[in-house]
Image (cartoon, rainbow, N blue to C red):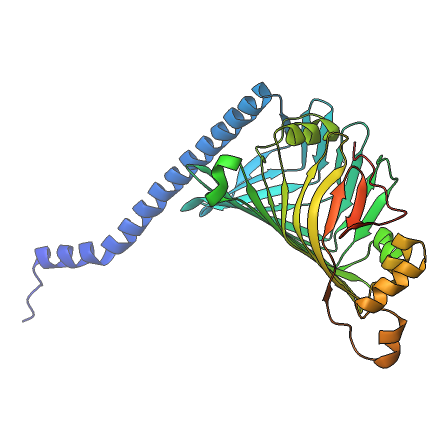
Length: 350
């Protein structure tokens, strides 16, 4: 005759059978509660930050804001994002910022166009196919800002020299505080644009080929946006002794190439000043424009291996970079070595 299994054993086996599912359910409930707490704190922190910015004179408007991302992310979405401070206004399209719950100090942002920034005089308008940015912060503040854009297009109007426009295939920008020059409030900027088309550069250098641009720059006295017009911001930077340390600025346009290094600033008349070293190849058109087609320009081109004689000797060879005498920007003039370049007068930027 069969004997029934002890009741205690059956209960214990069922208990251990269901325990993992019960624990999983409890963890899910706890995580859900924690996510909603984090979500509410994020919304409160955003409200507090916007209020603090308003007290500092920067008015941010996030249209139709939503906070989502359950279960592992926090997403803040604005159907439109606007900024106003003084005479300066900026507007963006739909903006979405995302951070992982377990990594809240790294924020990934996707911004839709169009962009419009104006101070009432100068207006910058931009658009793109895709723009993404990443922001890394710590308890001490910004650590790094990186931005990438596909098919960027920009137009600047209201400048004394007239309208400036350009477009490119891909843009990358990286900004970080310089840890070794904190006393100078220095920031490092690295940027690149591939297949850029800039009509002003075409007219200056010659040729219709796209241009690849690369820049590695350190800006001193870069202590942030004060909210004035572009002219006021530049004047504050100039009075603070701000400088632009060009570690490398290069442009490649077909067979034409130029690389520059040096230090620039603004003089009391708001004109660029400083000294830069230049290495170039294939810039016959530029030299002709600078010298007005004079004999001196042709001689300089030949000395640098860029003139007609070099082209005839090796018609299919790509010119090699040759170092030019240092360029000095002083009192609105540009001098190459001991000689002032004719037909070149630097105008005030504002």
